[in-house]
Length: 320
Ligand SMILES: [Zn+2]
Image (cartoon, rainbow, N blue to C red):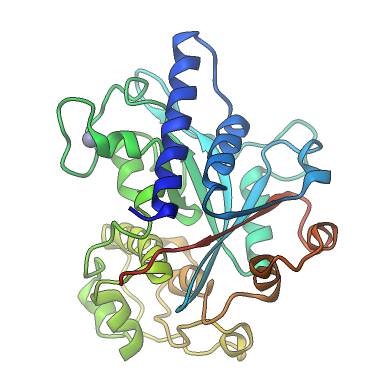
């Protein structure tokens, strides 16, 4: 196991321990605490730059995550959401609006992600297996302390897929998300593609979606695969045009895939572009600065929207 994989595993173990202690004491663990635990423990193997001046003033703050390797970089803006399990449903309250706030947390996440060219993502904190009553995970579920279920304690879901009506129980949550520690190892060779979409793919994108990937590209596949799986189940017909390059945007931003299908599904949003644009050939300047240790935290913070608590840069392990 690589140092990065070990750090993510250890972070999850610590998060589960804290949740279990809170559950035992009938305390409600908070998103902020779990974010602290995950960030602190992964920082053994990844670079964490907290905006210390801001952290105290903000609750529900979002983190920028960049996944980087020799082939490229993929950027996300991550907002934490804990599940509340009741006898009838799982609830995440994605549309939460703090008292006195002008916008919901969801709107803040989406607009900041769009501004920074990042994929908006939820880090779902699902509590211990006991808390979730060991409802069967989507993988091969083991009867006794299923490791796949335990890994799901910290899962990532593209924000596009997070609506309360459809994410309301174990099955719908597991289907649309992936365990954080499986992000770059879990994806199969071929993405779930409708035939009408498969015919529209440019060769490079076709190769990306139908062959096994590693490193940063595997992270990207985890996200687009979740979106495509959800698209697979929708009734809306596939639109047949290919978006191509919009206003030269792709060239300017250095996105890896220029020609992507225009399909919008029932989201009314070009989801290929939305999910794949944050995959770049090289990381943006501020990420390169962080990687070389040559940066000014206060200046970095000034360039970011107010809801952002800091930046995490992960060098994703690649196959040998
Ligand atoms: Zn399981």
